[in-house]
Length: 177
Ligand code: HEM
Image (cartoon, rainbow, N blue to C red; front, side, top):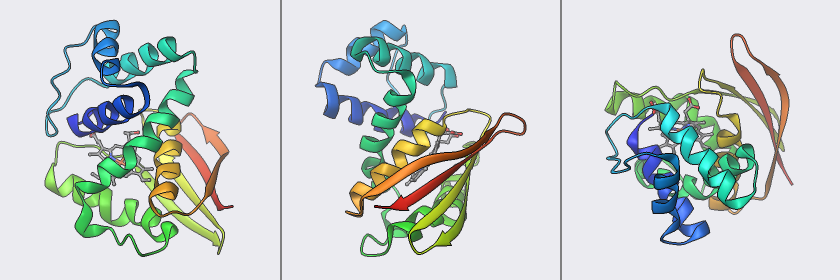
């Protein structure tokens, strides 16, 4: 996983749990930290940090991913500002992850492997996003989507519509509420 994801997770944890919490999590997860945005790190390090945060807070690991994603999205957007129209519709932003943002990420860093987040517009108030990744981090995707709702000041709900293991796919229904 790219270091930028660890960097925005750190920002989210500090925001939610305070300045010392990230250092504690690094210790508990048994990882060194020192993540640089363009570095690539073992996916297991992110999982260990999520598990350590779950133990520390009493939330389950899915909820930790959702919380971190929700608070991390605004920090991720900073690095791709030129591709984001904050005055536009949140569904247009969410649909652009697949065709624009993760594509740009991949262009800038061919070693990165952002997941597939394929959009289908169902109606004016419902969008489906098919998350496909071997990493199985769909709760993180849910959190990032909710963070987009916060950023665009548009209340959203996210619900899992279907899930299959092989090939991996979780379809999320995003609704305006
Ligand atoms: C709501 C919007 C977004 C969603 C739902 C989303 C979803 C995800 C998820 C779930 C991952 C974890 C890796 C995986 O599951 O395979 C990921 C990775 C990543 N995303 Fe996004 N993302 C969003 C927006 C963005 C934005 C705005 C950026 C801008 C920089 C970005 C850049 C990346 C990068 C660099 C990775 C790491 C890829 C790697 O480690 O190889 N994403 N994304």
